Image (cartoon, rainbow, N blue to C red; front, side, top):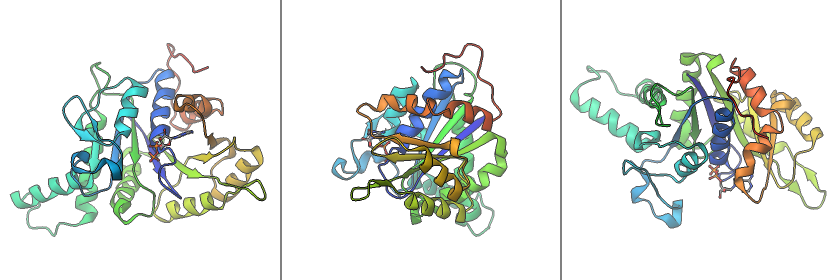
Length: 282
Ligand code: ADP
């Protein structure tokens, strides 16, 4: 089992969900079966009680689970059917930990965020990752995990720590980290600014996660000199600094990534070889 983790920086709403869905398309085209997990660090148990004015429409899954609308994108892009367990919320994790505590499962221990909550997060991810979502039997090959919000939020810290530990649990060859960030263009000078992304990567590194790929949202295609600059300051190779500019149709994003060599670089990073029956995106 291989894991792709998508985190976000600078501001929310940059396209983590679209990136997660697009990576699924790319991996399916390389012949792999995928599933997805969305982590929402809020304390609500699910999105069912949240105002759509505040958080967007609720997406209802086949099993009745009321979840974030990113799960709808995952299902549409990747032709999969997810269950309520594919959406992790802090409410669900704490509910599980508190039920265990009341049953006495922790055998008198002090129940703490590290290790009890972080272990519950890692166990949940591993359990759900092995459940097929494409109607076939046997576990999928790749699980794509999107961490909602932006790195640095208080709410997401237990997840960042769990993911930091998770990379050692599964081995570095089996997990790749994508960080979605913003490269603004300042009107007066018309220059692509890398500083917000530099700071965001520094913040990510300070909590123990090193991105393998940067996905940079911008208004126009990223120049190669900007990619070089990002590589210099973030230690992410220039070929893994991917530009995703504003497009009229989000279904073009997998092609945008593919045309920058992301599929081949990701397969190499995960020590995978495209399956013989693969249909490469074109
Ligand atoms: P996040 O998961 O980071 O909050 P989403 O993936 O939900 O972000 O995307 C936020 C909004 O931006 C959605 O309406 C999505 O359709 C739009 N969007 C994402 N990427 C692009 C893009 N490259 N071009 C145009 N719109 C985009």
